[in-house]
Amino acid sequence: MYKVAILGGGVNGFANAVKIKEKFRDFEVVLISKDFSPYTTGDGSGGLWYPYLCGDKTPERILMRWGCETYRLLHKLWLEGGHNVSLVPMYYLHQRKETYRRPMWASHVFGYHELGPKELQYFSKRYSSQYVAGEMFTSFVSRPPTIISYLEKRFLELNGKIIHADITSLSDDILKDYDVLINCTGLGARTIVADKTVYPIRGQIARVKAPWLCEVVMDNDRENYILPNADFCVLGGTHQENDYNTHVYIVDSDMVINGCTDIIPSLKNAEVLSEWVGLRPGRNEVRLEAEERDNKLIIHNYGHGGSGLTLFWGCATDVLAILEDKLKQKVKKISKL
Image (cartoon, rainbow, N blue to C red):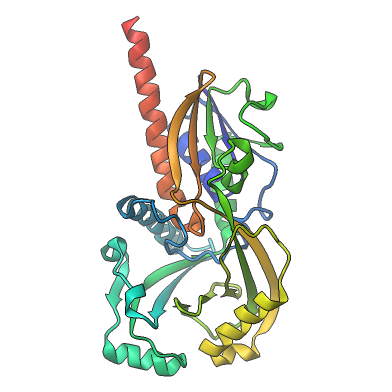
């Protein structure tokens, strides 16, 4: 019986824990983290399904595979109901043609099409901007704490274990008895595995009460986005690289709220419920790979940028596939002895 430790209490950590424990019921699988919901970075995010800030070097075909598997899970949860997953039309609008490119995953989501001249004219008038390109499809907006809670429940029902501990390196005493380590530590990978290519992408958003809104609007040139969910509407946002400040900036509050109000004037009547700042784990490429260290198998799964809630289920499938392959290789080696 193998002992597996997943490091990181966010959506990626719990997704990996569920997939591994469901496949290997007899393995001892624990999830170890200092912070859990509602104190993870993902908890405060907008929860939109859309590949965003996930590294210029991450191959698009891989992003498509990870993202589309997650899209299918969110669709399943929406059909079941009770998971705070909203099915919403999404409009991503561009004031410059060169910033728009049809994504590889376009044929794998509901209703994708490039906006035509009449539609662009309509949205330019509606949102008080001059749009020359854009896309529309049906996406999902979820409440991240609900998704994490759903995954946690699935894991615990499989007799998975949770440990509250602050991991500082892969050599910590608490990890010495585990055969496999799954590294889902996000920005923490900077210290835990000394990966200095991971960097913070500061995101500041506002949550407002605007129940009359039922569509996602993203303006590429303004860098503003409007994400209504079942309980409130998320207004964003910033993506400030290498900024570790987690305090709310007044200047960013003005950019977020006023920028979104410029797009949809009715937001001036929206009650501001709260503001939030989180540090996305940026990297030029999502790291999902295995290594052997001190007779342990280590599988890294971090650096998802602003796409944790877009890629988590597909990434967990690849982690499981790597684990299965490594275990088969080990069995073959033993059988030859």
